[in-house]
Image (tube, rainbow, N blue to C red):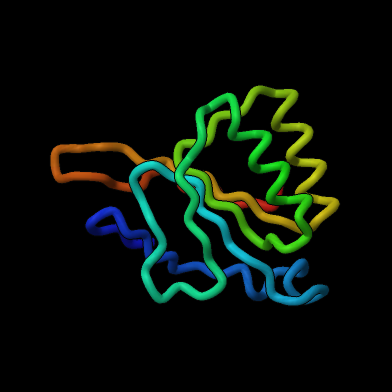
Length: 119
């Protein structure tokens, strides 16, 4: 993954995952405050990250929409109960969640500890 000027160019694809083979191509969503998809990233939507309390509800709504393939979330933190519910929804709807750990260092923003789903 590369990041410059707060634009994330994702170098990994979920196109070959078992979930993508069993259903039509879905949308990728990014819930973030400081990063965005590269302009020409197909089937992607960036949404301003809601408050920490609202994030689990937004994730659940995106998953259950039936149109979602992958959700990228900037600095995702979930309580155990929320994580269990979202994990169950991810399995049921074949959705992957990627936690983008964005830290602000002296050179600007950098991505660290990128964790990939599916959960």
